Amino acid sequence: MKKIYHLANCGTCQQILDEFGAKGKDFEKQDIKTSKITPEQLEEMKELAGSYEALFSRRALKYREWGLNEKELSEKEYRQYILDEYTFLKRPVVINGKDIFIGNAPKIVAAAKASM
Image (tube, rainbow, N blue to C red; front, side, top):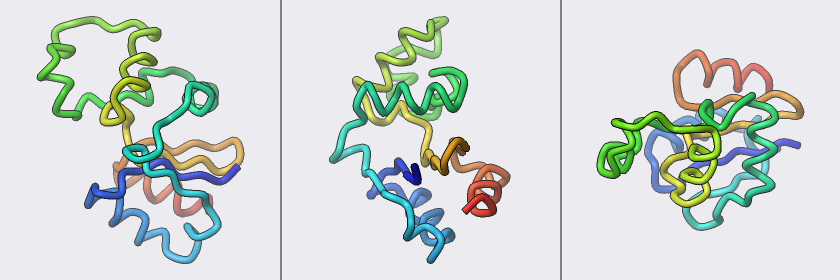
């Protein structure tokens, strides 16, 4: 499977998609705001990433708003928060076969680009 989970209105995601250029055109793209992540999709991401925590964004504004920064979350809670609120998915998430690249750190983006 070749897929990119992103936010269409996120400047960083759009910049990264532009960086992928022609290579990224082979990938199915899903805007997680307009097309919610299904439990099955999240489970597939978790299998590749190793945990729901690895997929969870602590940069989301709601992370502090909801007081989650003061709690110790379980894997079950990470999963539920990501399903309930799209902003909790660290993005973009690029899946290329059995490889997954999560987030926008330059090393991650470079590795995703190289795998394409």
